[in-house]
Amino acid sequence: MRTLVIGDIHGGLIALKQVLERANVTTEDKLIFLGDYVDGWSDSANVIQFLMDLSQQQECIFIKGNHDEYCEEYLELGVSDEVWIKHGGKLTRQNYQELSTEVRQAHLAFFQKMKLFEIDDKNRLFIHAGFTSMKGPEHEHHPTNCYWDRTLWEVAITTDVKIPKHSPLYPQRLKLFEEIFIGHTPTVQYQCKVPMHCINVWNVDTGAAFKGKLTILDIDTKEYWQSDQLNRLYPNEKGRN
Image (cartoon, rainbow, N blue to C red; front, side):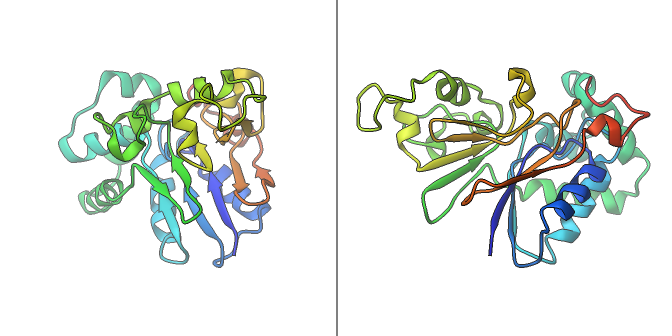
């Protein structure tokens, strides 16, 4: 059995189906989704339904992203945050306005069950964005840091790889886990189209919200598979560009 992590999907159901096929995913594989399932392309509600159905067939863990929190708030309270609308939420809201109350409530329950993070039996952390507490994400004073924080990634990409882990100069947060798998900050911002590895942090968000690709990574072998560029799969849409 493989354990595979999947980066930010952002409403790109075509890309999700494509990359699952390219990775030859079977029901024996464990799938860990790193959040941001919605906002960007026109299939946000369809992505959620697909994931709900997929979880009935095999083991899946769903981590909550910041865009998922916005969507959950809309489904629960009818609130359309202005920031959300400007960053992909407009199309997602339109998706849900076309669906029945029953479907919206089922999707709301799915969002509400998402985890802020997951730690496996090998002390590997899976989280959407990061954490600020020196004791780990479970000690966060503001749990929303789990899907908003970028400082963990900034620390990882600026730390000298030559610093040994036992050194007092090695970032304390990074010492807490064997490996950390995140999304949230697209690697395409660093002119990188594939997963980035810095110290013990793996960033699997390869820009599917924009003109990047959706990525699946095997956490043990580090082999990865990617979809086509999302703008080519949705040629009549702009995504979050």
